[in-house]
Length: 384
Image 1 (cartoon, rainbow, N blue to C red):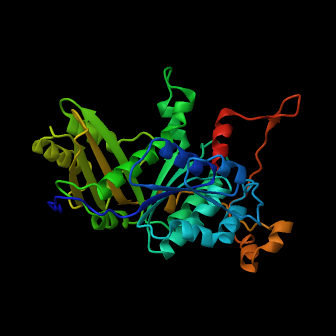
Image 2: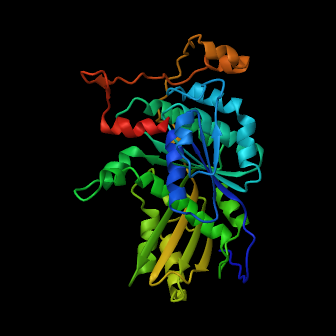
Image 3: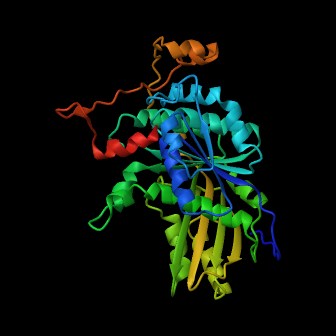
């Protein structure tokens, strides 16, 4: 393990979160409401009305002013990508000067699925360490085919990919669980990951993990686990680690396959050295013996009888990139629509490349003609 003892203040790197599409924008708005420190927030969307509703988000980027005219991508990832390409320079301006970027999006719709890879491409062109945190639709939806293809495409342009399947939400429901509370859970996963990393790279530690260590860990391509656990009382160290590595919302991953692990322990003045050792022991119990581990400790005077453990494990073999995911690669002939003529030739030709079919969603109607959506459809519409 690598340890660096430091005192004084640290000039931290720049950390930004960009929410792409409806789901990504909602996630960013949630984080702003929680007053996350040391992070800058951006929202990007093809839907101008949805973007304007995010008044608390300081930087907002409208995508596809000409292509979509501010009306959204209509569930079409190709249109979402074309919109992002149209405003590629605006995306570049928004993330310029960033050291680490989180890309948050709901996969399966138009803007999140199509535009998020463009955002990641721009970030990589700028040399930005890029982490994607995305949600995957309920398995009973056919839009999962579009989401899986989008996840594969996005993973090609990011250093680390974190996937949150909406199917996991069912594990959190109970008699005392509020309806809206359940659908805030994915936002809380992103919040924990971002705040944990922000603590690691912007706060001075007694045993320090620097940004170079974070880059080493995050550059291990593949799936990742990023979790935060909080505990108090006896055995709090092991309990906090267990919470961090067993998030019920994250895609099933096995830490035994991780190539690198970053662990940060934050505690109050009552933190004991043997608790730091307990955290290390608990983490190594979940990983291979030869894995490279970076560990740090931060003392927070505001924490009383509570410790917080952040675990980042990367380089885990990504099942989405392995055989087993069935993708329909039959050629699809693109319809000729007015907005197509405003797109470059290479973009129009891309429509004829193999891609998953875009499935029209069936909706019931009331007698007055209003659309009647199922509960899961209502929430997954945020993915656009």
